[in-house]
Length: 197
Image 1 (cartoon, rainbow, N blue to C red):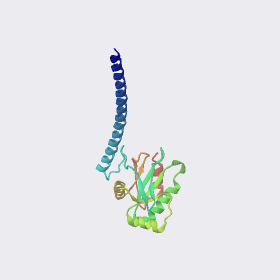
Image 2: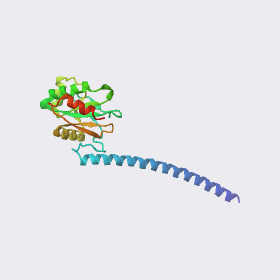
Image 3: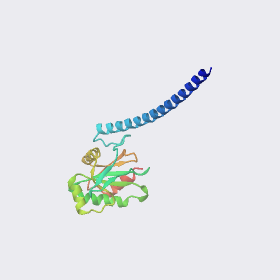
Image 4: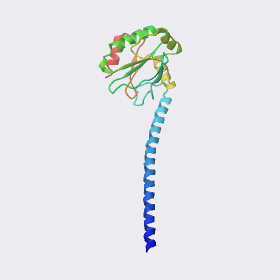
């Protein structure tokens, strides 16, 4: 009878150990599944962006994964999405009209209501623009990006070719396309940006 009690006690401790190991493995697999799901969501987003590499039209998919960049002066910058309800407007400075573009967008930036939280971010259309901005020490009320990620650059150059700026929400999705060139009245740009609400 003693050996039966001993066998039962040993069996109970083995079952308890198995239950602990099974629970631990189950917990790890659930967190692993969540991690895999997040990874797959990221891959889907990147795949959608690659498939539509030059598509910047408003949609439910993020236009950009991030806005990690380097300013024209060589400083690394990670542009954070604006707070909820605010927008970031991305536009490309064009070397042939660089001074006029900077003057136009600087005027728009100064007239934006400060409480809106909206941000303007300029991207150079190439190395010559970045070199010129750094050399001339342009003073702008917005960051001027000289270099950025490949996907970001492709989308922005496509938008530039179409003659538009992109207004993004906090999830980096394009929510409005704003047509412009260096002859666009600043009132038009300001009204288009403020009217995004």
